[in-house]
Length: 183
Image (cartoon, rainbow, N blue to C red):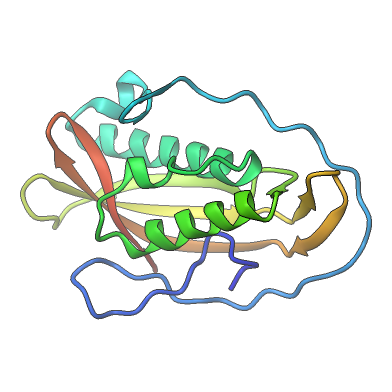
């Protein structure tokens, strides 16, 4: 796994898309850690979603995917438990495993010193069932350092790039990530 980063292994026993694991070496070296950015506004039901990401359109789904990965970065750099879960369906294995990683970071009093993901592209495409949207994503797992509560390096994650497909479901009045499959 990418140091339990973004490409989290899932099985294919459900209808949700899956992400296959990808190896990533860990390296030991010292490096300074920048401070995390400030947290977005969070409501009882999760983060406050930008207007563009609340549109039930292909462009709205693209904006939601971009926002999801912004929040994913916060979940790992703070770490902030519950953030990924609030933006996804219960059946999203990628999301569940990513949330478990955020919980593990919090419990171990560790965090990513820099954003682990840089979303390069998010483009919607057809073929999804009613009230769903598919979005092709291209992203970089940024070389990142995981630090403890004193800022000391615990491990390092190597850089890598990937292409994946995200499946989003419109429920109530907003999008949720249903799954992410490496493509």
